[in-house]
Length: 90
Image (spheres, rainbow, N blue to C red):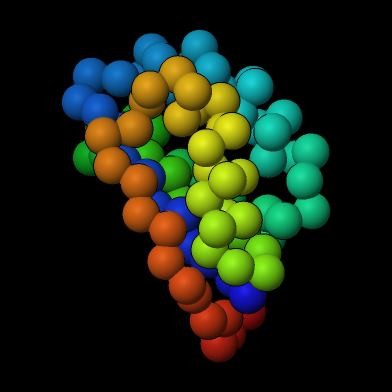
């Protein structure tokens, strides 16, 4: 089952994101559960959140994976939502 992880950064947290980006990207690449991922951009073109499409058996696994993300551990996010997602095109 696929899940969309939608995370929005805390205001003014760009430096936290940059400082933890290499560890975050390595974490994404270390698992086969990530189908696609990338940052949201604000009107200035700066990273301000994340969209990650994950594939796990259930939401509990997706939540456990998200809890180990270096961005989560760095307390980057203002909000995180994980919802079931159905791929239709692409």
